[in-house]
Image (cartoon, rainbow, N blue to C red):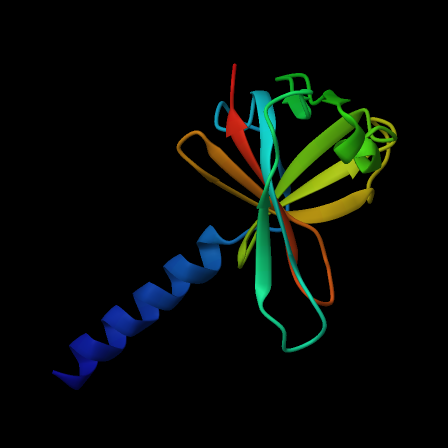
Length: 139
């Protein structure tokens, strides 16, 4: 019984280590398309509640990700993304990261957390108090 348990444990460890990667992964159909900003979230001072505020549908605040790794941004709330005409997604051991890039040759760029569930996307920049941008797919 101990040998069987050890064998299964060893196989599980090999699978877990073998399935993780630090190599860049190109964006898939899950990310491609136009996403409208519908909410912004942020925390107050350390220890204070997290606040989520809705963003009106007009004027349009959007990010468009192409299958050629190009990024287009629109709207005054997304000016941080205007300087990044390209993007790349990377898988990590804890999830996905989205790298906003100044050029196709850029290897570092500005990285944020990324999660997509159905037609909803959440981008989480590094913020001391916590913050996020919530998007819904429109195309």
